[in-house]
Length: 297
Image (cartoon, rainbow, N blue to C red; front, side):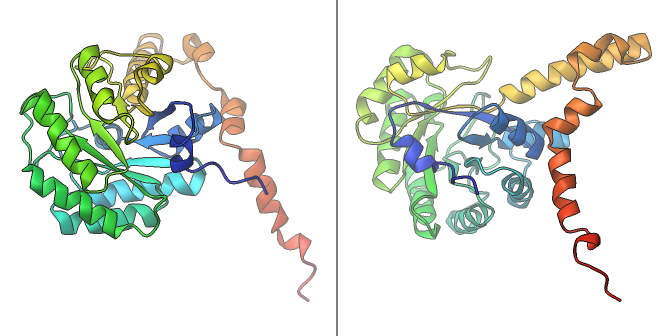
């Protein structure tokens, strides 16, 4: 048997920044794991985009995320952070959500302080719950988890709604409530990112969210580590790349009436079967074939 992979908690205790690419199903999780990532980020927005073709405006339900998570953790052993949105309701909903996601194999949940219906953190028009209400949700999440290796990531969207300093004050309260990781969403520039690290970096791991075309300046892993962040997510980059590739593929198929001109950009039949480990699945099935257990007569 292969050795178990390091938990997210142990990764965050190390010296290197943890980079978690966005995933949305078991195939994307498998490919990201094969690329060598030690942690994955299950993006609620990406599930909404790919499964329903809808925007990230609070239309996704807890059960739909849990179903997706179960398929992923059944396929890969890589630790998964789950986007839990607002917890899908009040503190009682948070308790149910935490228990469900932990039971489905996640190693962390991200909870945010937006009011319902929530929306993508880089969209305008967000509204917030009172800070005290989010404190209650964080405490409920901490109390609901069965293992301390299941981490609670507390996110505040207050920069866009109340301003930078109020966002830091909210984050302070969420840390006091027991959050294991802080996520101050959508800082506008490097100075704000530095300020977040100056206030919290010596006390708790900090998450940086890299959204292509969003409000926060894009930085690579080396720069984010230099600033002082411990965890970086690239939640929607996968779907942004995939959506463009699919547009090009369908456009080529429509234009040419076949896939010939696109072959060099595709995994062909054998390559795809190698990627998803079809030979290993067939070999495992053969081990249980009736021919291996003698004649029943």
